[in-house]
Length: 221
Image (cartoon, rainbow, N blue to C red; front, top):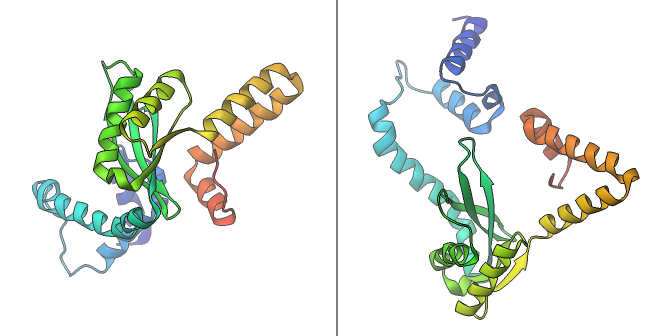
């Protein structure tokens, strides 16, 4: 087939399945295309049954293998349990958990808190289960937003594990400070608003974000 016909088949496949076009710049997608190009003659994709059973388990093991070098540093460097609440596309309130140290950040899991009140005790129990998963001896601190219920959760965790302390998220604190400053000083408001627009643009445009990350060691927050 000519290239333009192949491009058209790819576009129809993306559109028919509601797949965002920015996947075309995704490294995993490009790796998949290269693998198909090198596949044996007459290659056919796996069935959905094989994909959701055997291949999914194999993929999980493969990811776990890639994460092993990061996990190995937990015992020597320790980790911070970092957690934040957010809302997904279905408007479900989720709380995620990450394990972070100088080697990198690793997403652990997120759970749906629909119908549950986000009081300090509930958040503390959720984070204590994460601490048990990584091993209490490997955890140094818990980092959350500095709202009242998260502060209460921090106090509960410090009661259970005396060596683990709670830290408020610096980014959340700075964000609140900037908001307050922008409200108090009108001459800061346009700068604050423009900064948010610029950050949102990069975060919502995959190609622009890639260019930024290729040219900067900083993170957009």
